[in-house]
Image 1 (tube, rainbow, N blue to C red):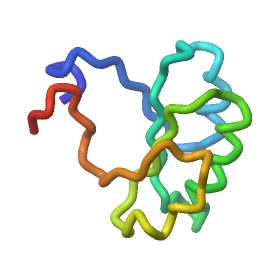
Image 2 (cartoon, rainbow, N blue to C red):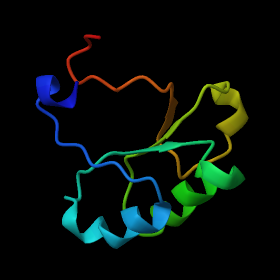
Image 3 (cartoon, one colour):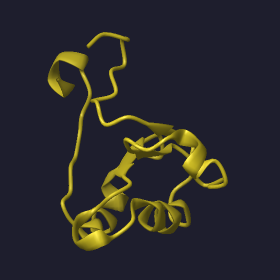
Image 4 (spheres, one colour):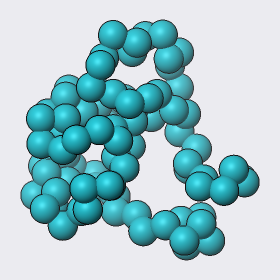
Length: 90
């Protein structure tokens, strides 16, 4: 899907791997973090740590209602778990 959208994508299974690569991403990078991570880790905490290292463009991907996360001012938005298309197509 990313290739057909013309989007470069990097995925990480461990938050520390993502943090190790932050310097390789442009300032305009967009970050999507799953709310429910392995071993019960919460994506909200990873997003908070990320927000202290990068500016904006942090989204939480979840199946939960958006209202559950409305107090998280370091999150730009809450989205579902489908790949975010840039052209509005699926």
